Image (cartoon, rainbow, N blue to C red; front, side, top):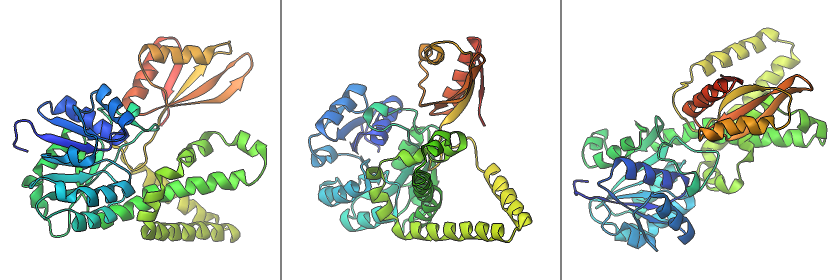
Length: 370
């Protein structure tokens, strides 16, 4: 993108596309960003400063664009590639943000002309909320951003024809990570798609107990484990269909692991169960704490509060004064006359730390929950 004012087209200006736009308007002020989406979404993206121009259709959006981002659901991305492939300017760098890469890479090979450069992308960032109003210019800060190269394209191209894409990814604060599409999809099946299905299954198994007390007591760790069970199927349909083979393999591996634990329990093999716990504890401790991954975490704090009317309102009021946005609230413990403990969830570690500081300064007892 050697043009003094490169044009960037973002097709889809929701959470991811809008966050990319906000990051680039802040950090690439030389660029002109054109968005395409539904009129109401597009208007809001323009109002928030995520785009400079609104395009009524995708073909208008990509006209003379040096960089094009498909920031739409997987099915829409595959269709749009077919629709606009012939309208892309020669030399344009094209990418996407879909969480399944193999079908995107195959469609790009078939639908996009040889005169453009395609690079698959998947930013490892998200939010508990969706849509343009949840977009954040810091969403990708310190996140891994997977880059998938087409077959026959060497990594040396990342410093050549594909360097504009890498420059823009780094401008968001993310760290590019090169993976082949098949490897990405295999990892995603095990650490993202499988957990989603397990959360749904676990929640439904408890719900099928048909015992309201089970739901009343399903707090703490159970509630944390099943948080993603609230995700709507509309967000997952294309992903599950697009990565079906890898997900089936992951489910098969998990079924064998569960059966192994069941067998050890039947055999009263406590030593083997102990080994399984040791392995899982060691594996979990090796997961980096300072990087965002496939599943967007909530960063939790615990707050002790006295037993008096309006205390939750007072706690959240302290945070509101500091413009710290709480994503989740749970009352963990309560004793009449003594008080209770709230768990508050935040989108990122910095916000959680700032919340702890603000609450402690207001004479509450607050700490981060590891």
